[in-house]
Length: 202
Image (tube, rainbow, N blue to C red; front, side, top):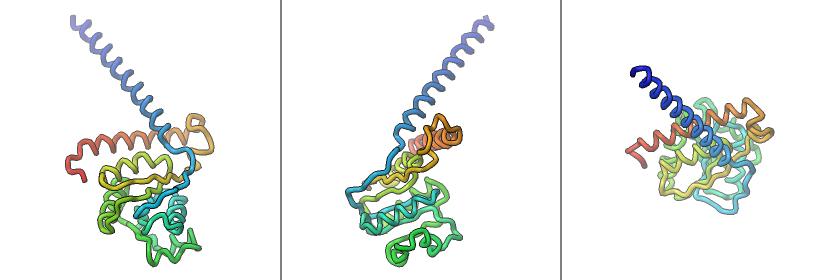
């Protein structure tokens, strides 16, 4: 009797594990398909622009959007505490003048959740109702989810920066790319669960 019960429990455990693995795999495939694969051309403006640090190309692209008057101000969120504005200005010397008038640096955010909190504070401070979000394409789904959770009444416009990590080769043919995307997928799932459990939302 106990042996039969153990077999039944084992069978259902294996079935549940297999079903979970299938769902996780299917979800990962869906996640990869949602990642923007091409650069976009913005044909609209927003009140502000926010760039989430983590890859060098994000900041120049965001500053170029500011110079093109796609937004009134730019927040660069997640800047290392020891990094000075003049060091960032060297990335786009043609636009260094904007650092004296229209670019704000956030040095407190340590992760995407922190980016969202600081963006919320900044957007409220300037009464912004729309934001262009600049980050790497593979990071965009989680960034948009975190920002939308903190700023549900603000229009968010994504501006994905295409990362060489996920551009040169198909993800399934490159172990490093596959690992990067799967780790980001798990972080995305964790963020969704945390936000669902967060009763003190924006």
